[in-house]
View 1 (tube, protein in one colour):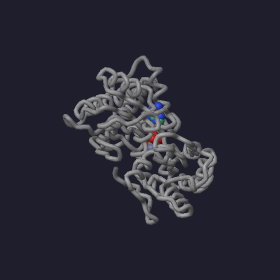
View 2: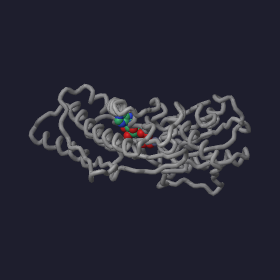
View 3: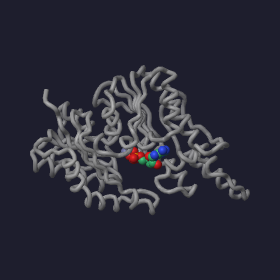
View 4: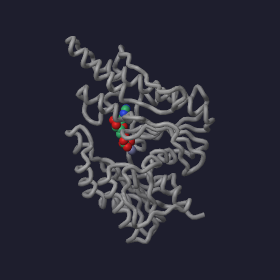
Length: 334
Ligand code: KG4
Ligand code: ZN
């Protein structure tokens, strides 16, 4: 059979990215233009600034992905683009670029769900085995997704309020750490020898859902009360206490779900999957259960277009096609 080359495009948040992937599993090129520096001073992603940067970068980034791949557009088989969820103005830049490219070069267009992309980042490293459990944990998402086959996603648990990464970033902000705060909390947590105890939020018995806003409030209250007493709490003890709570709950729920659904593989995805504490805890827990567990390398955990091309290839092979009427879908469901 013929090899399949797909151009992936991702602009759902603050990275402008394009990539060429072969057969859904081999990265030929992978270009990411990050805007983090422009959003840093605002302490978060500013949608209007994100859209403008995407507009400035998208053509260059796509050209660079083709140049690095040493390929001409007519050697491609399809164009895959993040259709949603994400910031509507940001999504539209990628979708319109993809439509223009597909139209100009007479290529099929495939709209990809951003989370499907995060999950398929793993396929760039090793073959997926089903049933598979994916822990998607990022700035916008915290979900446990069960997959029985390629392209089939069943969300068995999700956050009822903040995403884990969002909670990390908010706690980091109260500790006066730079944006994005997740990596800073992670680093601080490892320097603590006196973690503060914060509550674990389990929700109803048997639930695979998450809630992180109560934990975030506990941290804020704790700091507020300490300040009123005139007490200085070392930030690393706060960071460690917060991280312990997140890691314990996420690990326990992932392990229980993996056992209940008798999965053959567990994968982690999304920016928070880069967390050292979480990686160590999940690795040890699944090791003990004898269930194969993988986390993609850091650069594939955070937003990129190779993951969109990888997920898009599976959809392309299933015959799924987008049309020139495609739009960004900010609230798109998996
Ligand atoms: O997947 P991602 O790049 O973008 C989204 O789709 O959300 O994830 C970004 C999130 C941010 O909230 C960031 O603070 C968090 O991932 N993050 C971390 C770590 N590295 C990135 N959170 C905890 N520990 C880390 N080491
Ligand atoms: Zn993401």
